[in-house]
Image (cartoon, rainbow, N blue to C red; front, top):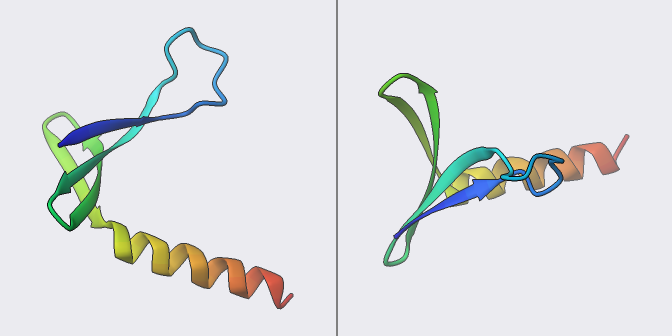
Length: 61
């Protein structure tokens, strides 16, 4: 399954697409378009790990 992730804080009638989430069983990936016909993909686990690390780092400042 592929689902668009949109900026829900946008004032535009159709919020702009930020990336897509791709779910294949237990495998979850985020995919962002970087250029015409070029995409960058990252696993949801890698995204969670990095965001959680940044939150912990910010809390310790």
